[in-house]
Image: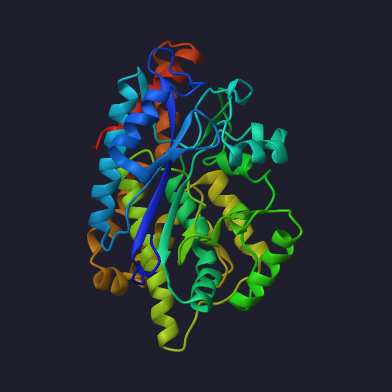
Length: 378
């Protein structure tokens, strides 16, 4: 994103894991040649991350969801190709099925060295990847107001993205175990609610002026106002293994923000719910993904996720039409029908075990599936 971008332009950041193609394990030390090749092809659209086994990409500012798809495809294809020259594979998954955090090495850059020193044990466990979606809203107070309202829908978006069922070689029973790791960091979880941009800035300044944080980029809420861009930055989602799932979720989030903007123009707004209620749906999405439903607070009952999704798709249909992404939006039903990456990882593991593979062999089969799916649509 850039200053002066038009309202509702969109940008996406994805984080990937790099694995050794022979062992299927996470690398410990990133080959310099991989990043050099990536930068030569992608410039500032690719960079290192906290762990040396991670790499992050970011799209250009996109006016359409089709542009998002094309740029993400180019980014994944390029990073995968560069990784393959060094015998590595790209994995778009929020956790590695069997990696041990004790084996990882953080990236030796000043920012990451400082984070490692500050976060200590909880930082060392941070071998997780996410997807961040930026929607441009160029007015500060409007950006904060829309962020406050769209927080209600974060569990729904998380449920569609889940890709982290395994941790340290075990099935955690959760669809998104990544959040269990990330929530150990300070300044994470659902955002605070602020009445104005000035109020938000005053609170950030308390932490920045005392030296607790450098700036608001060290506030890692599920959704936040971006520090660098005039955007709402949604951060709750797991990284999607399938490229098309990432595109669908981007379209849905963009339409939700646009819908809230449309209501505001009609002097209407989404009802505010207590954070403890939204947090309960957040947990249900983290635990069950799309399988067990979320709470409809208006009805006071748990509603199956497919029914909730249908209601949301109806709600944002005018916005999808205006933004030109009705086709992508309706594909959200396909995610529900075939399952998320978490479902496919479990199925791959269970199938391998049923065919006589050991647990370690089955986990390697999961990695092979992730490598294949991460670039299947490139």
